[in-house]
Length: 103
Image (cartoon, rainbow, N blue to C red):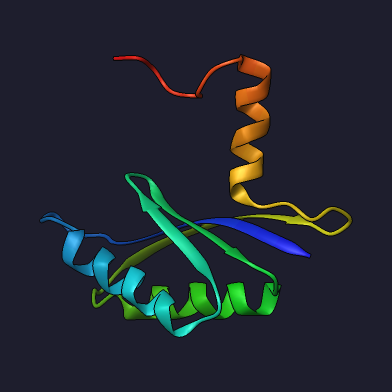
């Protein structure tokens, strides 16, 4: 089983969130997950749903703020082995090009 998720953890503050977001991302290193951070969140891949939830909780708890916003979107394909790259490749195949603008 492959689990792909999008995790967004951020303090609810007026100033820059980057320092606290970095703490959340750093917390993922203690878990058996692969991840890549993009401007809107962090894509996580793992073979174990429990490991995903533990990593997401650790990321949430790593943020030092009075109020923390966390969003976790999970794609848990149970009958087919896949990964995040395969999902993007499938869209690219249908488009006939890379799924991004040329700008």
